[in-house]
Length: 90
Image (cartoon, rainbow, N blue to C red; front, side, top):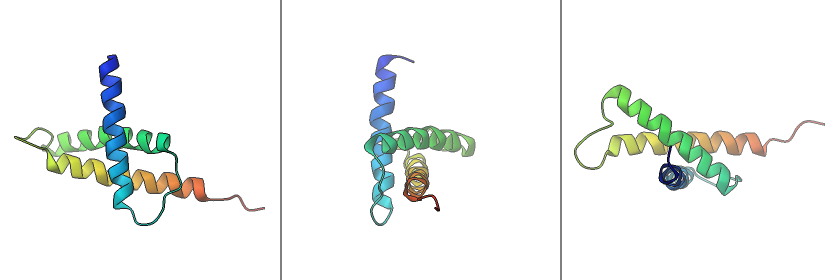
């Protein structure tokens, strides 16, 4: 992986993660770094799932792939926010 590939993954991850947070209602108490990491993972998994169902490479904008990525990011953000919001019982 090249330096430009790493920067591209970070930018795409930030956008996908931010869109995932916007889809969710309420406030998510997670950091921007966690949002970017969730977005990167969601983008990778969303691309993989889109290739499995045959919609990863279409003419124009890949709306189905983007919707999969954002939905996965929303799920990831809610999991991370839920895990970080829990306090251990004393």
